[in-house]
Structures are given as structure tokens and as C-alpha cells.
Length: 238
Image 1 (tube, rainbow, N blue to C red):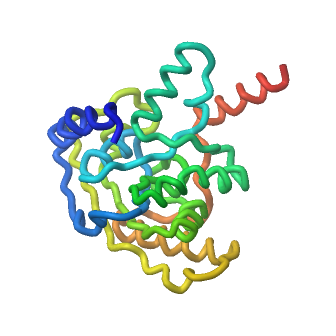
Image 2 (image 1 turned 30 degrees about the horizontal axis):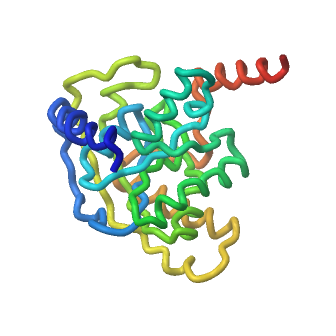
């Protein structure tokens, strides 16, 4: 555990639990040792903070690679902070690039750590649960590591998409499901169809925990993501 992450565990985690007093169920479903993937729905930027706060173990998360690529002294400081907080850079541009970039998380799992991930790939803009991306399934089978579905409830009221600061007061709940049974896909090569089957099984498990309406397509990009992509295209053109 890095010094920065340890400080966060001792300070930010207790404050997070104090401010929102989350109702937690199923914590025993997270294994006490060995690799595991915590796969959750995604409603707010505070989701990863809460997952790290309520989990006794050291949790790694995926972060978009732009946070690690800024130039100069500021960029260097940001990289050190991100790595110190157990953030793993990953290409979120979509398609095969994103799928292959998840291989950066494999060493974390193979070293016996816990990885937190949001299979929808981005926050839901309307509270519905969107189609999961297959990277989670690929990681689980390549590592191998169990997938533990997690349902976060009420976090969209704490910090809705577009809000700059979280609100105190809304009640929140964290429901941790039992590890998925992946035995029928283990022990051999898995094709894209198998990855889709595992992903659908995961999203069904999350939906049962949250009660969200399920949408069988990928989550739409948020306005800020569209603006960032447009700016990136303009920079490339220059």
C-alpha cells in the first residue's frame, strides 16, 4: 500500500463513511485474500471513493490515460498522485483499444490485489443501467479472478452528473452480491460470444442488486466527454 493511499484510508475513508453513513450489505462476499474484481454500476464521481472507503482491502481503479500524460511539473505531480492512489492508466477511446488497454490491470490481479471497475465505462446520465463492456469478463478469465457484482444506490443524488461538489444528506446504500459462477467459461479459450455472455451475466446481477432499468446499449457520452473529444480532434488536426 502506497503512503498516499494509506493516508487516504486513515482520513478520507472514515470521513466518507461519516458524511453519508452508507448502508452496507454483503461485505463478506469480498474475499479476504487473493485477486478479485469489484464491478459496480456508475452514477457519480464519488462511487470509487465510496467503494474504497467501505472495502477493508487495498483497491485499485482504472483511470483515463489523459490524467497521466500532462506535460511539465504539473503533469509529473499528477502522475505521482494518480499512481499513489492506485489508479491504473487505461485507454478509454473505445473499441479494441480499450479492450487491450485493460491488460495493464492484469499484473494487479495476478499479484493478488483487488480491482474496482465500472463495466458501463462511464457514469449513467439518466439513472438507468447500460450495457457492460467486455473488458471485465476478459480480465476475470485471463487473471483468473472472481467478479463480485456491486450495486450502488442513491449516489446520483449525492453528486449528479454535472455537479461540481457532492451534497451531504442523501441516504446511500452499497449492496455487494455473491461472486459470479464463471466455471463454464474457464479452462480454455474464450471467444467474443463468451465474453458477451459473461458480461450480460454480470449486468443482470448488478441490475438485480440495484433495481435499475436496464438498457441493452452502451451508455451515451456525456456532454463534457463530447467536448473533450472534439478538443482532442482539433488539437490533432493542428
